[in-house]
Image (cartoon, rainbow over all chains, first blue to last red; front, side, top):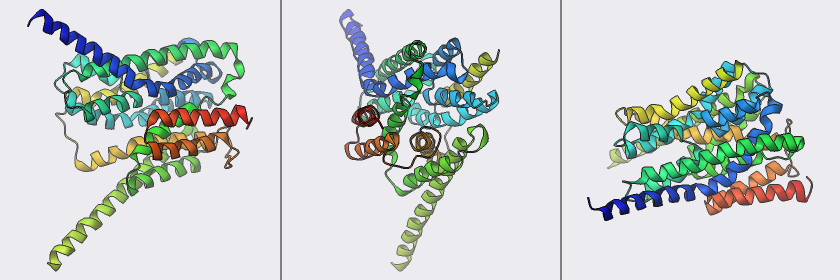
Length: 253
Length: 106
């Protein structure tokens, strides 16, 4: 390989890293207030500043971390918090299932990075790159860029939130939590393309309110499972109907 | 220490779910129904998080257009349906929320 083409190669990689970070920027707009709020809420919820930093560095799962604070504040037991984290994160199985066919040729260290960095935001950013563009040979560098942007922002915003929380103790009442809601709304709406999806979302939302009184915030899990069950049932019902119509049509012919 | 076991447990619960498919790298194929079920997981989980957050922002049900969380969420959902663009949704939703909460003092 000539020196020139090696340079092209590293140039291409750098471009991918930068593009990955750029594609993630819109999502970081929502993650900034959310990260700051996590840092701010940690100590009032019963998690030390060091614990909050460690959680952002090691766990790196925004929605789960936020829910863990709510559970801690409500006095939930640690196994309950861990089980809730597991259920809330099950959605990442879907993201991984979509990405794996594109990355199975990569060495394990790349797949470790991808798994650790698999957030809603990075999935949204890289799935466009993987699905819409043809040449994906260097797309793992794009993923790295997206992960670096999300991770550094998340860790930085957690630290900032811890500091700001000490300066402005009333910050927890400003409504920064809306940043998480609005980001998730933007992520849920594109799924709403058919009746089963609408039904799943409506049932999950209604059940989340109906089960709010359950201990340990178990309502979140119950609501999600009800929504998924209704979605699958309706999907099967509608598909069976259409296949039986096809069968009936076949008989008439 | 409690926080150590909490963080270690949350790490395992998070990383194992994220890594399992990357580890087997497509050598396992899901049955069709499981693929369909997985498709419902993100919207169902995210909605179960969003709805109480916007309908009960301060602990009690607040079903009113004077609720800035709810009103801004409705606007954001409409923007997302029409524009199908995440950045626009987030920015418009946040601006509406800030305007209602701090501009109008709701």
